[in-house]
Image 1 (spheres, rainbow, N blue to C red):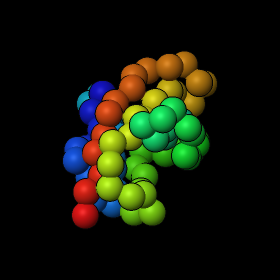
Image 2: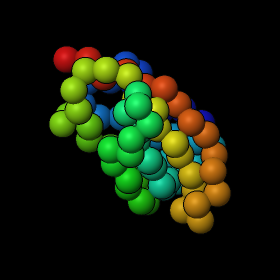
Image 3: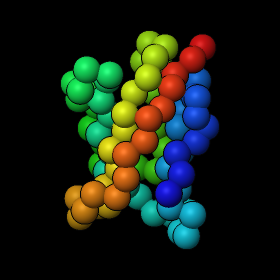
Image 4: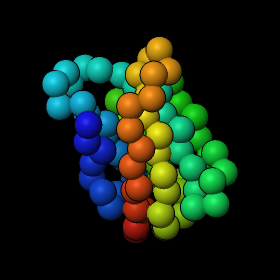
Length: 76
């Protein structure tokens, strides 16, 4: 699984490296653990509304089976 680009400016992409058309459920957390965003059935995400900083993204499949977590950085 890969989340790119990292660091990102506005948009991130999620790819499991086996099937480009796979969709994922995502939860985005700030550094304090607060959920900022929850999206279902996506493979890219526009995060331009976020301030610069570090975030954690939890990724699960569409059946909510946990896959992976990533630290991502926003910069402008």
